[in-house]
Each structure stands twice: as C-alpha cells, then as structure tokens.
Length: 281
Image (cartoon, rainbow, N blue to C red; front, top):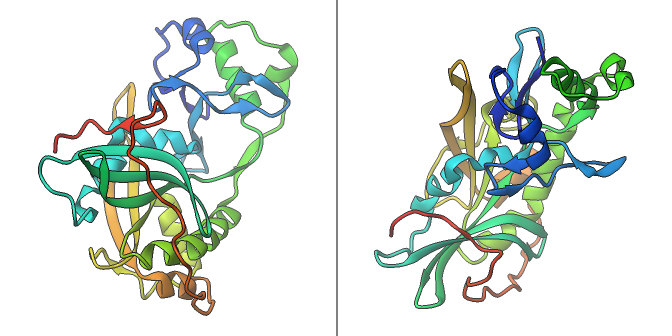
C-alpha cells in the first residue's frame, strides 16, 4: 500500500492507467500546464506529488499548494468578497503580485472596460513536509511497472509533516500582508486544508477569530480532502472564519503592526499570465 495518494492529479488507486505516459507528460490538471514542482537535486525531474496519506489513520494531506486550485473553486468561493463587483464585469485571476509586506499568490479581480473595479488577495498554503517523499514516489512507480533506480525503491528515508513551522510561518506572513489590504478596504483570504486550520486553532490564539463576516479584512477558507469514489479525490469547502489585522497579530501574541501604505497599481489584466476564472458575471 503506497502512502502516495495522487501523482500528477491522478489517484494512485487507479492501477489500470498509463502511468508511463502521465509521468512523461508531467501535466498538472490544476494549473493547466506542466507541473512546476521539481526535485531540488535534479531540477529537470518534475515530482507531481499532490497528496499523501500520513499518520496512524492514514489521513489524506495535501502537500502541493497548486492542488488547492481544483476547478478554480477557491476563487469562486471568494466572489462574494468583491463588494464592488457589478453584473457585466469580467473576472480575472492574476498570480504573484508584490505588495508591502510580501507577495500574494493570486488576486481575484473584477474588471470593467479594462479597469479593475475591485480585487481581493488569495493565499494558498499546504503543510510543508520534512524528510523526503521521493522514495515513496519511486516505489509506487516501481509497483506500476515503471523502471526506476533500485536504490530509490530500497531507500528507507521517510517523510513527516512540519505542522508547527508551516502554521507559524503563514501566520507571520499574513500579519505583514493583511494590514496593507485592510488600509484600502480589501480582503486577504488564506486557503488551507481543514487539518491545517484545526492545528492553528489548537496551537495558536484563535478564540477571537469568528465565523466569517464580509466586513473583516482577513478570511480563512478551509477545505476537506475526501474520496468521492475509489479513483477520485476532491476538495470541499467546510468552514469560513474571519478577523481583522489586529486579530491576526493577536493570534501570534503580538501587538498590531504599524499602518502600511498600499503602493502597487493594477494594470488591466490582459497578459498571458492571467488565468481566466471562467465564472460568468
């Protein structure tokens, strides 16, 4: 039994599959392009490792942030936060925008006649691993009759979940970024798996973070990973929480950060780097 649940978006429970073709193509169905997750020691090898089973219960854990982009659901679940959006506007998703406090993974924008009418920032976060998933990946490929190095198959190196560092790092990053968006009455949404949000609630100061309110600047959207049948894994929105910038500071036991000025400007999203949301206005 492999601990690897998905490889290049395909469930590893599907054994009657052309795995050699899938590995060679290295296609990420969530990005709509080749996988961007490569092996550090061999950058030309794309890993494609989306989800793993971990712990005594074998819980499914997402380890690649791009896996959260399934059906672009994380974006459609944020449309209600675009309070200045109007029917007839277009939706655009713009990746990697730098703002005071750091870079934001995506901005969901409402655009009319080439002008951005509203926008919200969206951050994707999955649990960082310790050790290496590589031997588990190679053992699975060996099981489906793909030739791999024997040393990789026999390697005893394992992987773990770095819950504490992942949670602390993302909260610190949010602490720096949300003040910027709050200053211009916009939102920042953290998209995580429900297991990671549960860890945050158990190990950080989260008692003041409430059920989601549109007026709050900081939102937490948690998704569960479940098997819909024997061959498919899917994500489902299970909870939404929110707070303001001071609330994020409080979750870390810190004083609120000083006010920050928004110093970035959106151009009309019309480049190849834009990702069409596909949601009718």
